[in-house]
Amino acid sequence: MPISKPHSSLGANNSGSCSSLAKYLDKENQELNKMINTSDNLSKIELYKNRKQDFFDATSDQLSLISVIDKIDNNRKKLTKKDAKYYAPTISFSQKELAHLSKIAAGRKVESVWEFSDVEYLKYNNLIREYGRKVMDGYAENFNRQNKGLNKGKDLVYFGKIEHFRNFKGNDTEVKKGLFRSGEHKPGLNSHIHLLVSRKDKTQKMKLSPVANERSKDRMIGKNKYHVGFDRIKWIKNNERTFDDLFNYRRQELEKFEIQNILKNGSPREKDEIKQRISSFQHELQNNKRKYFSIKR
Image (cartoon, rainbow, N blue to C red; front, side):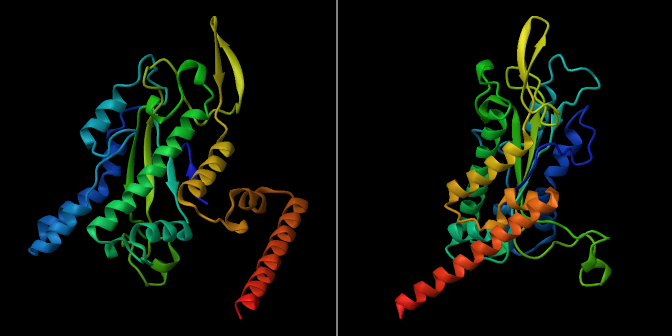
């Protein structure tokens, strides 16, 4: 399932400028710049240049770091000094989901983003970017403020950055065993999306918080009635459904958020019911396979 974290700030103090966080999200471009500056191989230099990418929003794929900082930091009308000014949701994918996307982009199994041709790499990024925009459409819809003009991601001030690498940390088992060093890239496909979204909508009339405890409630503020709350579970479920529909992905039972959530947080009875359900599903799947191969023979 796509792992959707709606309220991450990646350790940053989100009551101030987003500058430090935005610069951190540009780290893969900075790494590519170093590779360009230290290489004397013209073909590799061209490859590294083509692998750089900008921030994106609801309508553009080519937004600069400076533009992102400026637009987030200047979209804070009537927010107090202590108010959160932005949030940094993250969207991660399973290895199966990334394998599915890479197969769409390249038509074959891909073990690393370096295996993509420039054309395939562009298509792969476009697929992830398209999904990120759908996720932010759902983010906007989940606040239930359609009557106030908040309908889609275009009504938000947000920016996305696709990253393709994850690094080993000092406390990772692989590092402790000496298989990898801290800071080295993890093998395989590790693509994910970092999102930077303003606390205020584009009109700067609404405060929007994905960490609100109230999931769905009308509240009077002065003489005005506001719908508050963000149902995080609903957003995550919608993101999973969006991925499956958008990419024609046939999700197995054990991959589903509903199942994983119960196995992690459910009661003993709920967990037992889910295990029986999975066992029954797998048994039915095996029977269908046997019937299929029997017919083929």
